[in-house]
Length: 359
Image 1 (cartoon, rainbow, N blue to C red):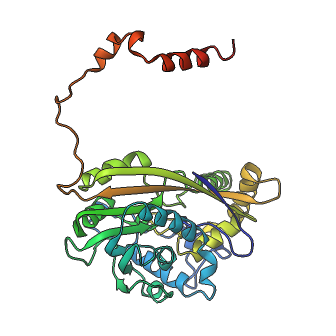
Image 2 (image 1 turned 60 degrees about the horizontal axis):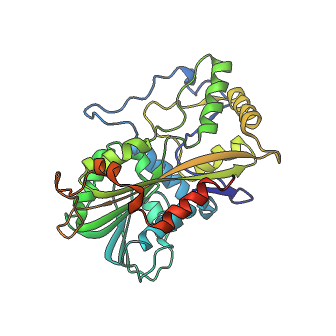
Image 3 (image 1 turned 120 degrees about the vertical axis):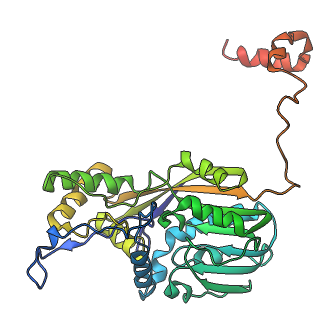
């Protein structure tokens, strides 16, 4: 599925890129060259520690404090509607929780009391949780980290996550925790960004840095590939899996507006190996490359977001199970023994017309 959004006064992108800083000065107050500072290193003791979660909490706190924070919810609202559609296709649930990212209430608005009776809204940022909206559902706000869910096992009928899992260090562990807090026959409905997200921005920055600085650093967060997602869900204990892909393309006046909106969404890069600043001439070169390679005839530039949707169920004895191996009563080899005389005359006549339609 492909969707298009056009950025007027209040439309832009989302998801996980970088905070790119204009480098107007090269030294700090002590006289040290900020461009030669040592790269950030994750604290020792973790095999999966790609993102600085403290930095992400600070980014979200700042974004939630903006006076016009609603202005930057366009993509999250669009994905939230698509996630809600998948919830409506399933069933009615008594208790639900959402492990949503900043401004999680956007998705909340698309779920009704007829579908979810009680709603638990969780976020890592206290400022984000304070951005309340009126809802017909009884709602409980929970301050917590998606990497360490503060819920008991077998608590919820439904867990929803919309555009939050891409900042998780231990994604397999987070999926296992989600499976544990679900009741038997409970369902997890999630959406996260995929590997082709913001490829225009990624390529433009890399080419500009290679040309101006002789090398490039990562400015866009690493993503999970769709080919890995099904395996991760299966390893976490889910069954009856569904994984599909949406593509949403947002149009901006230019590359600088893309970066500005990403920062205002709290979606700046928080990887430990991120580059703290980018030269001004490199940014201008990247903007020119972006417009030249990907620009539209009307002068705008696209930003593409690949959205991976997933549905997984916690096992229960009432669920359909595959037949026992070897229990089949017919073989594919037997199909070759079926003659034309066994095909109804009407089907044969229809096949004849199709094959000779152009004759």
